[in-house]
Image 1 (tube, one colour):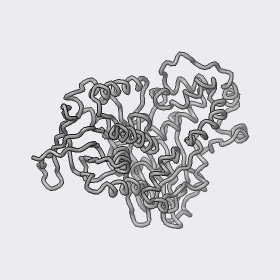
Image 2 (cartoon, helix red, strand yellow):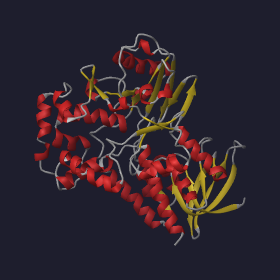
Image 3 (tube, one colour):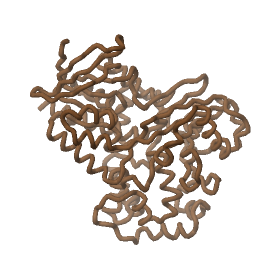
Length: 467
């Protein structure tokens, strides 16, 4: 068995690994990407079903960082990018079984029936509530209740967290999961003040807040991005290459594994890497570092990934839908006691998700709120999702198409104390120079976060390589 010597080996071909590899190639660094599956992209998965485009993983990304637009342009995807329709600015939240538009301005907030007058008065007090300077890590629920009140937590933040993390605000860390929210309080003494005063700082850094960033996808779905990245890597991307062991050595890191592309039993391979990037989920990284970093292995294995099922419903006739579908979709607070987390109105977001006169919906089930609901027979899962969709949107006919996928380990949860776990990973990186952890369990869970973090790491690796 011949051992290849490679400057950088990246384990994992999800969006983080692909972007890091592509950025390194752009900087003239030789790289290999090893992916155990027979496809690249990780949880990014798009399918075409007749006239419907189905995203079974991430449906959108946010144009928050300069590097995102640069990646899209340099890949030649300018003509393929799609920005969400203006209607997507409208968001709905369920309260008392009805869809209420989330207010988008102070005037609309005052006129909204979604929040009580008591909640509105409580929010007005926020700038006068002293900041907590102890810098302790607390749950998002604790932080929001203290600053904004319980009703705002229940009917704004809780459903928002279900949409982003599929998580529970009583367990998620404000310090790790929502650091910019905490920073507003620490710097300005108020979230509302900070939201206004912090705008000029974002402008100087060329970053856009997630609240105002453009939402985008691509013709044919988000997989267009990962497919293009994978194609650009050519033979430097090795699919069906399962890494079994990573061994630190004097020259760097020896990587041993099996290629199962042509032989089910696997053909052994060996790489000697000067640097290694672990771009796989935390539970997989846990297995690969156990032999030389047992404490970090336990840390990685402790990160919880709740299951989430994605259910897509397609309608040939938009006329059978009683709702105007003038928005991004709706989210459901836990207090509403429903069996789904919320639904995207996919055909409102992007024009190619359904036929011209049709409609399409993507519903999420399970998450940290109710993990058991993500499992079960397809028929039960589909009915569970359709019950909420058809009820809220007043749909009079059965769907033309139903497609679903269950992610047994969906989105990593940044629980209270998560920053201490990250510190342990940083310790390993210092103990073993040239070894790096990269993934959505660190630095943000969104597509945009992953792309930004991968770009940042690639710059560090390139700088080290040319010293």
